[in-house]
Length: 65
Image (tube, rainbow, N blue to C red; front, top):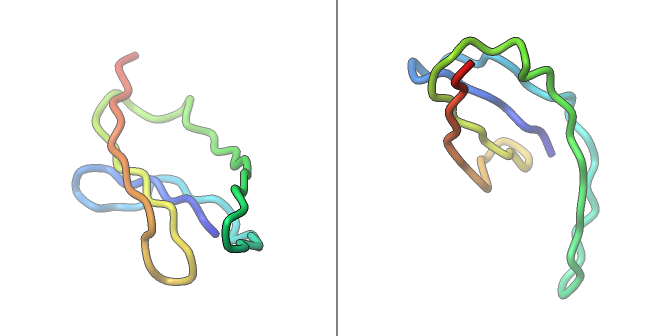
């Protein structure tokens, strides 16, 4: 699993180190990923949670100040 943060021009601005996540049927899994997002400039960003090479979850967020 890896978390990648992109700007609106689709450039990677932050990414976590790849980590192993064990998923099992019918069991909820939790994990925590730390990224230095305090240094991001104000704007809109996209966060992709990647499993292998494919994004499995995507969200957008806005940094204001």
